Image (cartoon, rainbow, N blue to C red; front, side):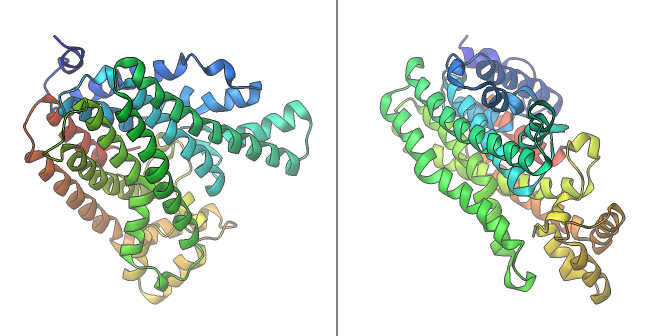
Length: 373
């Protein structure tokens, strides 16, 4: 039995209960790899080292590395050979979160303080700095930690050659991450910031969907493409498998972000791990908000606009704004739209030769819309 077959033999593919165990197994492999990474002694001084591992210690869901490993399996490869790339995708994702939390001024992530918030308090308590200087220190640590995490992702990709991945494939993975993925993701992040500053009627739904594609879906597309590319082992991809799996993941990525935006407005705050309604306070032009504003009457629309982007909004005002969005029916619109993206993605899988990895990709896609945090 190959190592990949061993990983896939833990239940009936396609069942969401089994999917949870599959996800947990891959997640543990990836985080163990990061926890014990041999180059970590270079992460200095201590504040940088601890900041680098902050979100690693507070485990994420691991959906991106799982996607990469499953796509490797779909292409006939050994998932464990792809483990450094799965770890690279996760740490790449983490650095974007560290920087995104600064941009969004979020103080909580995964139920714990964000990196910049944690080191703001560290600066106040351990260095005796005042509020302004402590906040600056926290942001400085988070920026530098994120920069180093991005470098770490490239180093992890380089380790693929030690597992028998040919040099040309390793170089292709690094080039696509640096030349395509990073510019796409940062474009999406910049558009997200800019949209909050623009009048609503100057932004179209297509603009918002493009932003979601760049900010969120691009990394999922890369993960699927990278996994399949490794799995092909240098063989000619005449069927365009890597790009087809990338398209599958991209469609799921848009659905994922639509669902994420909904959770940011409706989820249990304890499960979500960050304040519900923070997107309202930040003035995020999510598609849910866009649809709600288009549906509301003039008085309710004005009330929502008065709260949207108001960093002084009270909890009562935020709750009222969330109620208006719910009342508008926008939630149902977005759920239907997200489901349509998943349906398109699943249609791509139906066209592929079927195996357990493909079945698990179906469960992966379904999980995107079934999650509650």
